[in-house]
Image (cartoon, rainbow over all chains, first blue to last red; front, side, top):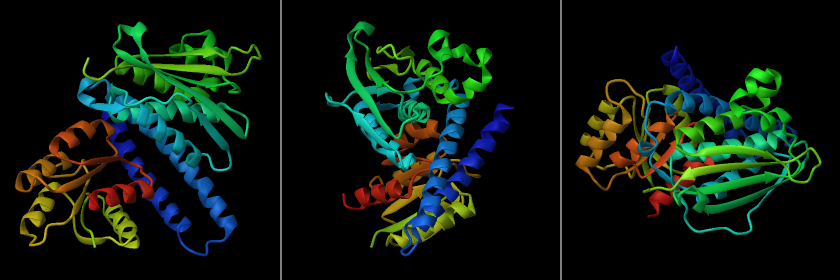
Length: 227
Length: 120
């Protein structure tokens, strides 16, 4: 079954690559009517969301087969910068601002491209759950001294995200047993939890601090490379 | 003009890369549908391509193995590894790939990497 899923996902990602790239070629063609370009941009957005979900499945299916260390390292600071830029392109028509006032230098962590997928997936899922058109994500990256000085911590706060309470009230792993209709809205968060743990780190979600019933803080703790 | 060898077992992916690269002014000097064919074409080429775009999961010989063999022949060869298997990134880089792009990637990401490599 795992083998079959792997084959199907691989083929689907190849097909998505072709759809995505040909849409981009259409958009790059001079003289495309603006309405057609809008439709194409929306199609690009959905292809990329779909590819992200399929990539998540493929990644988790394979994550247990190799050690975290064998996946290489990546610069978490650079990953956050790239993901922030990427977000706007996947949600055309939404005004997304990533506020990251205290940017650090290199923050090398274990995980290679899995970390990039992880960070981007969390951000993408947060934006999907935010009902607004003007979205602000507050990001903080810090050395994790309380983690045996072995890691880096990223917190991402969205003060307006409409996160189902079941995610913060229960163990994230059990969300699907509580309410499947809600679980599908947080598949990226479920992925983040599984992927972070596969990398030897941890992931948590806390409700927003403003008491409005909205908003949440997402925390990823990842292992520093070379430790 | 930067020359490129495209290696991927899916014909439609090879055609897609060719469309993108030619549109952006790159010269596609060859295509191969598995690692062994890529090696053979690389060995026989009088002018080596500036860049090789390499898939991983291919019949006969996979991309990591083909990259290793090519790097043995020419340690300065630039290889961009492109794969739907993100977990193969470290293997690909250890084999000698200078860049790794997970599928599906944005056209601009490929072009940006091509540009960066070809101006190094």
